[in-house]
Image: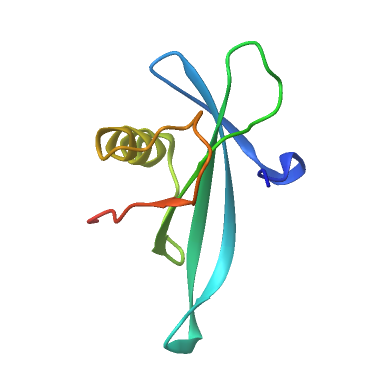
Length: 97
């Protein structure tokens, strides 16, 4: 399953294309508190739609999700072993903000 393109944003990191989607979610143990869940998926060369393994991370609600944050997150995930064009379970990272 891919990211919904209608509400996604495009991103280019080191000449590779990605899309990402931000969703407001409740914190598991604190239903009265919110956070943002960010899902990223690569777009294979020559394709228009994303496919492959997704990468996910969470940030505090209200925090700006800037291009610099997204660049850092994608690069960190790639260095931690995320292979965007591979199939598999979602790849999660923790950003220390």
